[in-house]
Amino acid sequence: MTGVDADLARARALLAGAARVVVFTGAGVSAESGIPTFRDALEGLWARYDPEALATEAGFRADPPLVWRWYAERRARVARAAPNAAHRAIAALERTGRAVTVVTQNVDGLHGRAGSTDVVELHGSIVRAKCLEGCGPAPAGWDRDARVPPPCPACGAPLRPDVVWFGEPLPPGAFERAERLAGEADAMLVVGTSGLVQPAASLPWAAVRHRRPVIVVDPNPTALDDLATVGLRGSAVSVVPSILPSGPIRPDASAP
Ligand code: APR
Image 1 (tube, rainbow, N blue to C red):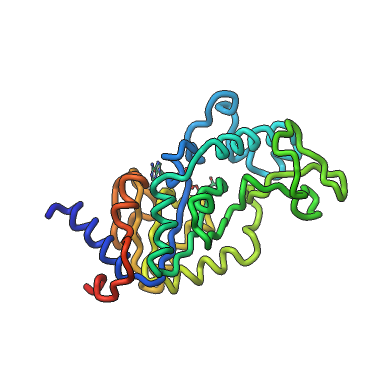
Image 2 (spheres, protein in one colour; image 1 turned 90 degrees about the vertical axis):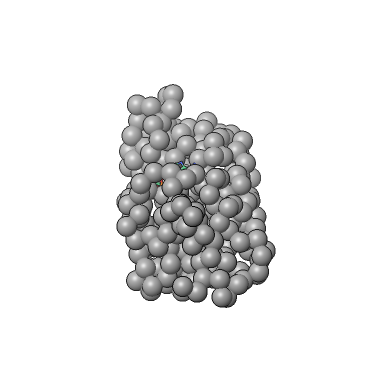
């Protein structure tokens, strides 16, 4: 058995024996659905912009139509995209009798569209909008095709994407719940994140502090590789379906 085969077997055993699984994902899990990762070079019109400048409240206030248009184009791309085999395999894991929570940094909603029912969207969702001045969520029928930010019906301020911009706090309670679950999980599966953005990237460390096994799946080196119990080099679609159990919990499986 090669080293890679042994790693795959170890990952399969850990997940087969896990009753509680936390799946922590980043942009890489959606790459094979055609959604560029956040740090991929921005394409076309956006190539000259720094995404970290656009994805801020200051950037939005400086030019609401520009930032709104960037999100509208990303929203349209997400609407055309479909969950891939990795999203679907993660959703199917819930149907094996395991408690599965997906904690994602992604704002594309693809885990929910794949069928996952317990998804913590740490960075919000691009398919939702809210009042820039804090009145609350946009009304159900807000104009998703608007070329400029529609006005909040309550105060007239522009609507903004319901995502967490750089420098903004995460949704109340989201990180705290994710951190607690990471410390209680029988296994954490990390897929497609560079592990560069805090506090999200500290979640695998919460699992390690509680001596929980962490499996990291990524085609490239990441900042989380050193903490991995098992590190698997490969894409989400090529690896995740091949390591997730399709059968019921096997308590003996992950015994050393
Ligand atoms: N399968 C799995 N992983 C992949 C794939 C793939 N097909 N393609 C790329 N990746 C990996 C990259 O190697 C990288 O490690 O996905 C990761 C993407 O990293 P980032 O672009 O930094 O995205 P992410 O880690 O999700 O960023 C975290 O930072 O930019 C903010 O709010 C933004 O949610 C984002 C957060």
